[in-house]
Image (cartoon, one colour):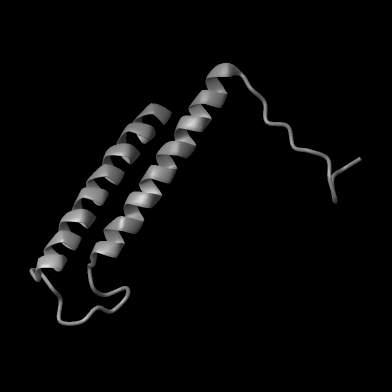
Length: 85
């Protein structure tokens, strides 16, 4: 299941990034400009850019989780303020 999450998050992130770049390129030459941009209402290139970032971060986190799980590494919390003695 983790491999599927890693694979899908990578390709969804890549597709979102390509869409964001294409929309930004069209914007640079004056095509597909909305009349006004309202956050949360208008589909804009920044929406795809942020989703690409989210998917790539999910991919990295899943990859690290797979790596840690395969090598049997244990992440031990450090003792600090508020830690049980």
